Image (cartoon, rainbow, N blue to C red; front, side, top):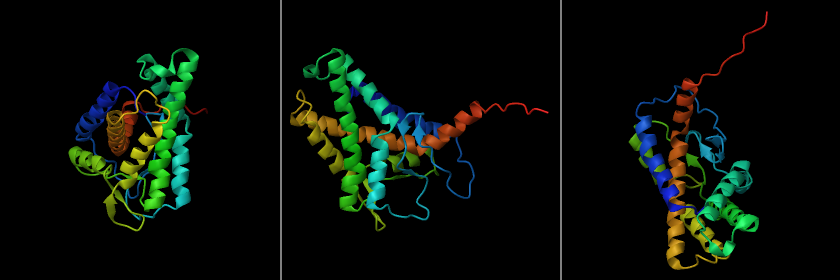
Length: 237
């Protein structure tokens, strides 16, 4: 998931600036219990590890953590995103050794998809299981847009333990570091320390933006539904 830096920076800027300002005019719908989570964001991005709140917290088993990682890794949205990153990488000739044409695209796609799968399993299953940390994003859902922004960004570096309480998010940082190290095996053009540090920074930035989007996604859904109400068919006599 190490595509064009300009696109990544634009996405992070959009998530961290536009969404909190938008949420200032939004008020969460009153409810006695958390609503079911949408399984996709923008109709394509998998959303399997978001929890609507910390109420009645129950830790995940190791099997559940691996299930979440598998759902994210083998989702059609992940495949589509890998194809998008592959096309962008080939267009910008990000890895000249991959070449062009169909064979080149296949290499770009395989490595992009590999980035997603390895990253998902490292940060959502393997390290959370080994370190007894919870890989889920727990939405705050209340407060000002900017306070929710700070909360969402903070969960990249601070997470919940299976036994309760919070802890530095070793699973996120070490997991992504491990994924970057593994990626050096198939990115022959980018194997130096500077490139590795850049990849890690980009990945942490993308995951931060993803948390922000997850935090404000219900607000976006409510606004969209108000603008585009479902048209009901007339009942037949």
